[in-house]
Image 1: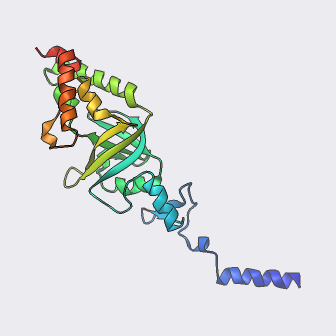
Image 2: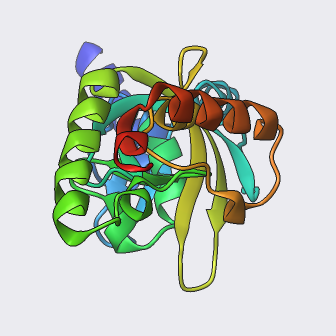
Image 3: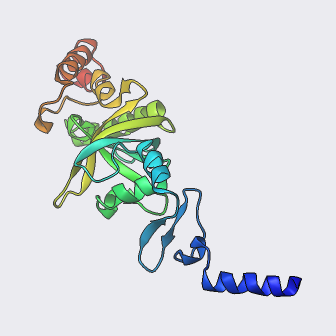
Length: 221
């Protein structure tokens, strides 16, 4: 009798496999999904409500918008004009990485590069070739010491067309990193990026750095 019951149960499993058996082959990761090598897409298997709430804890939108807020960790600086961040939630990375070029993402390590708005240390340091090289090294050193490994929130917008990059304003808790670059004399305030609600603060920060002869202002008479 017991054998018949087991055979009956096995036949039911063959006819009506559990939902996980219908999924695309591949072990689920900690985020409740997996990357399908055949389709080159990420598949979710968690309930929709859970996906939405988890994504919103990292990214301010579920469906694509031209701007938003992303939260992560500062992973590295390769150039003084941009930071690389690591996201806590892979599906959010998958969404954002599809919007940027290969040079602005690292799919293996799941890092995104975000170019910083209203600042440009590289352009600022171009008083001379010799000075530019030393200045960029110093700015990178100061940025790494200031922000590497720290939690960051970035208010970003997506640049389409040939650029395909994210541009943003980075915040270490409540401190505006872009504004810090200007107030420390590591960058001029770049007006070409357009108007912004921090305009007055940027102007005050630049005047402060000029008065204190900080950073680039030491070389300007």
